[in-house]
Length: 279
Image (tube, rainbow, N blue to C red):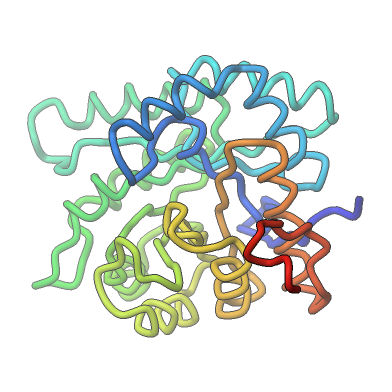
């Protein structure tokens, strides 16, 4: 299989299709019972099978990893060994949202030292941190420069994970030292703060490559619909993070993505039900 297209973020080559982890970790955005199902289903072995499909296609970047996710970390090692690919780890930690608060710098240092020891290439504070630091009045992200410097000092690439389209705009305007952005973006507008066309325009104007997330709106869009929209409306430097529960789902997502990018018919088998017998 030909490797999936790649983009460049500073000195790091990154697959444009990034492995998402919500369907590994139990974040369904649907219901508590669905979360429980995911957690009970996903063993080390099953996760490794999914990752091997992604890695074999050259999709070697994983978003949402964390040091305490033992079953996922073990599965990553299994997939690396099986495919000969080294994973690019994109860590999105929750950090203090005010560097001036008592003990905040020490807590941030503990988190970032752990990220460095874990082997993260990118460290992009989670939206729970980033969006809390966005100051709409001053068009700035107050204090984020402190965390970005601490990330750089540890040899990782800093970035922002956000649901707010304002965050990349303010970061660009202020010259914040970041390498990339994580931005929620999907055809359904799921969890997005403003209209899809506004977010699309922001992505195109961003000074850094953008990693878009939730292309299928957490399962609310069919893969062809969600992926065709995402790939067709972002730049060649931007990325899409896609989660999958099974190896078959991973293969379908890769095949559909390549068909959209290459403008060829998808080779993915369709579902057959009695209602389609006339076709």
